[in-house]
Length: 365
Image (cartoon, rainbow, N blue to C red; front, side, top):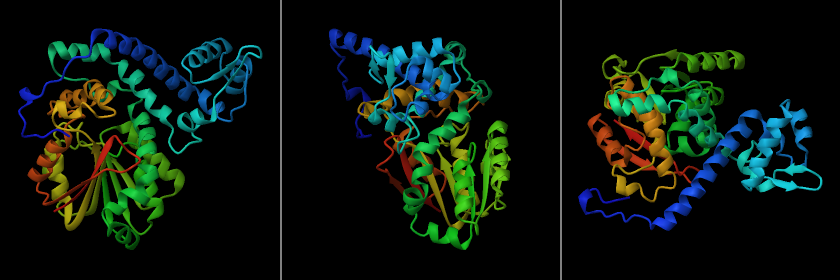
């Protein structure tokens, strides 16, 4: 992290030598191609089909996956050249090594192929974003057809596996109170997978989820119906005026997972969260780990990607609503400022070992 007291014009970032940057750029083009292939492999099911490590021909793999052989063969070629697959040229078979399968399929602790979907997804709105560069404004949520689907898969890697054992224990009393029975609100809940898991695990508590997306809430309600959960409800709701219409001191716990920075009016939402919390309540917020200063993010392991996603989604959807356009990389300093202005007096921030992308905040009135 950078020292926020240092003037930004004092920070010198030397350019890379031209020859090094050229090599890096060519490498980046190839790696970007690999990301596109991995996204296709994830969405078609090819990667999961190959997770058993059995060598297969393109015809065998296409038949088993219900796909066209010609497209499957070309994909196998690209993944071979990328070094993701092993190829026996004599037998004309292709194999996914176990160490790669554990990273890119559902067989491992986290399926990193999920994250490969982001760049192809936001690339679909590049022309819209280009227009915003020239004319201002933003790109609305409805232009991102699969975003909530991908975000649900994303949370399945960062939130769901750690929810009970690592995230909730950040507030030491919370699990005990959830077993006893409290009211919990998740704002910007998306498809509600975190709440669905919590409602099943803590039947004495009541859970509510709000999200702007009708598609996401429809999916969540269907999941609740299928699982027969009577202690969970979802509602389509615009949170733009939550500072005014939040019910005072209603909830014992409020949750947000990667939701604050792309709100139209993030400070209004945070003020509403403070308003709706009971006096002994707790607010748990997962949001992007970053500095509020560009120079402080030079060593961020995902910094370039996150700035890209900010331009292509998070910042622009906020601006499309006439909002602040806070952006993905708002940073710890800005977050702490906003939490303080919203009225929170006890503010803690944590990082969890499994998640280099996010901070986990524990806030109390």
